[in-house]
Image (cartoon, rainbow, N blue to C red; front, side, top):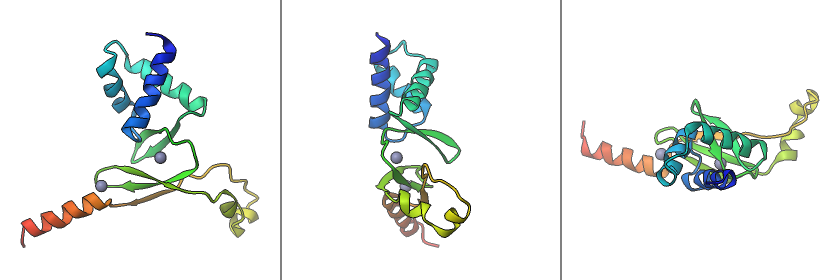
Length: 134
Ligand SMILES: [Zn+2]
Ligand SMILES: [Zn+2]
């Protein structure tokens, strides 16, 4: 197995798994390539991030990899830990905020995360409430 095919398998896995951790990528890739090591996965993930092909985000105390390299925000469901991408394009708008201007700060990246509960978790919660009357 060549190095570049491992890298592309790892890149593909990140896209399929939707914001996975390194461990989740490892578990996925190992199903097809039994000889892949966690070290190889970490090394390739680091390289893909350095090359700008993946982004890494610290979310809920975990490093999660993201194959969406466009500027976007995350809706983070704190119950099931799911991340939903939403388009977010406001680089200039934020940079023009009076306080940002006053501090002379140059905005280079935005990491916006909205925390809450996804529709599926709200439904589950509503059902649980109906099943267990108080
Ligand atoms: Zn959820
Ligand atoms: Zn994302």
